[in-house]
Image (tube, rainbow over all chains, first blue to last red; front, side, top):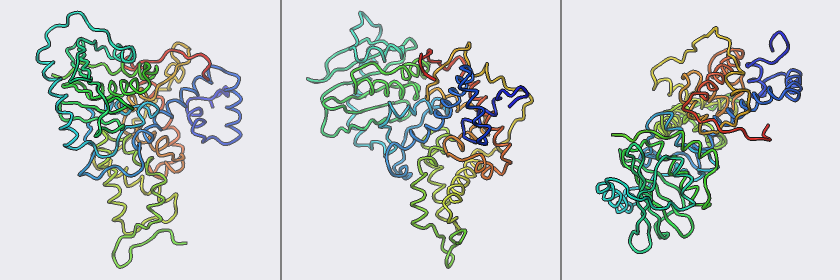
Length: 252
Length: 185
């Protein structure tokens, strides 16, 4: 408390942590109840505390310790800030796998989509009239700054959505029928400059591919699209904000 | 009651009870590693190394609280070894203007967790450390003081300064502030 009896930053911080003596905590609580601005400050402190505490929520999505080194998660976000942006809120990203990443078999299964992405990317020069983005995908992709430049069939039942950003970032999303091998778990793989995400939702399966994109940005986009694919609704405001905040130039 | 389970015949002892206790705070311990490390893989390495170090110890605290503190201390010491820097606090005589840091134009803001974690990564290591112990590890100031070999009062002030630094980072232009949500406390 300062000389005027108004709680200072240290007092409010200790109050939020439950570290004040009961009498002092009661006085602070009474002040908070009477002062909306003070209440707002305490609210911000609580939110920051909850945000940091969510490291524990995001880190282990499933029971069991992290995988042993031979099966370690090979996800390597670029920088700590970008890395943590990839650890999305549990409410959105509850399926973040700390389980062993898809092995070589799964990656090989997605290789056909990587080839399709690379083929389109190599041939893409300039977008003509842009196709319409499906409603469920539109809000999320607008927030990313990527625009749909191609929507075409893949095999008989799949769709290839190709997106391009203002800095020449290129990303592909493949939607198709659920596969036998597929898992509903959301998985992300980073193999150098090749980024890959895949998941299934009921009857549909999805594969997302990008090269040379900031890994945290890719993870954020993948999570947003994953969330949208589950609900067929635009993602919530938190994720929209994260998508906008994650915009970065694609890597050379 | 023994304060610790000591090695028998030279063999380290890490009992089933310890494993059971560990399962109770494993998420927090790994979350602490994630908070301190640059990426999940490094955090996993650190976590695994911590387990190896703990299971190889010749004496392990029997008391649940002491064991928890001991595990976090092992992880923290391994982390410090890895970063090869001492965790020092940069004392500042500047009085933190709490209002200007947290209240954007006097309006209530909603801070999303992703933004908080992004901002956390830009804090000084000693700020990350103390906030991770309190907010991820769930330690009291007293327990944190024990872990850090500091007075409780120092922990209290360090936590406050860390949060002020975090609030400052959240105001960075790169962090999107969500619009005001009416009705939220």
